[in-house]
Image (tube, rainbow, N blue to C red; front, side, top):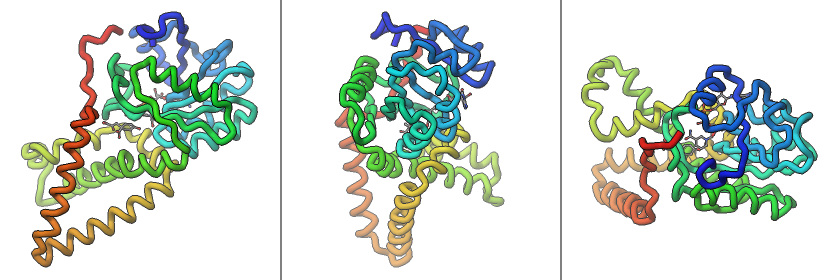
Length: 279
Ligand SMILES: NC(=O)c1ccc[n+]([C@@H]2O[C@H](COP(=O)([O-])OP(=O)(O)OC[C@H]3O[C@@H](n4cnc5c(N)ncnc54)[C@H](O)[C@@H]3O)[C@@H](O)[C@H]2O)c1
Ligand SMILES: O=C(O)C(=O)C[C@]1(C(=O)O)C=C[C@@H](O)C=C1
């Protein structure tokens, strides 16, 4: 924000005093306040960056100090429950939720890097009947940070992200949990032989427990729907292996290889941290 919107003044708040202190040291906010309310006084735009289960509580904390013409947005990984929670506590506010689809398994103020959003998607999910100019301001904010913007209905967002982000995390948590539970595979063997595939799963499974607990509890319906489909597809593969049906396995693996190739062609491979970051 400081590089692309130098005239914007950023005020931050976090419930954790250690986080506030670290943000002061890193200097990526102009001011850091000790209460949530104090951080929104005079704000034009408020972006809530807390676990999705905490959005409602934070909305309630800022309600009395929020300027009437401010836009409230967020970066939460699920959108419908966030919108419902914010509407309940901020009934007259302009709420335009958004989700930058970019991140890593790391969290905390040191996990950010200047190029995180470059060329990544940010999905803006304006509620029905909201002011188009407000949604456009949020879209423009994210474009200036380097993201590409798509607009989606919150429910559709939650279904798409359930399969592209939430289910993969659940699978990673499961496979790493299963491996670490196996008595005959000791912890040291799991670590020693964690080349390739398993290692990639451990990266995802190292993601923040609070954030992901909240994602699954708040995108329950879409995740359960996708999990049901996934379970059926897994059972079909189980059957193919049992009956020696190599054609089914080969056909699927050929199709999935093409998916990977088209992701790479579209330039959406992993964001690489910019270790020469400016803050
Ligand atoms: N990490 C990712 O890859 C990623 C990507 C896109 C969106 N998101 C979403 O962004 C949000 C934040 O995730 P993050 O990775 O930045 O997590 P983070 O752990 O780095 O930051 C969350 C912060 O919220 C603070 N917090 C929790 N409850 C609070 C409250 N009631 N009041 C004030 N502060 C509170 C915590 O102290 C913590 O510092 C989540 O909703 C997550 O779903 C994360
Ligand atoms: O690459 C990763 O480490 C991520 O988990 C990033 C990821 C994702 O699933 O794509 C995680 C959650 C967010 O809501 C957006 C991005």
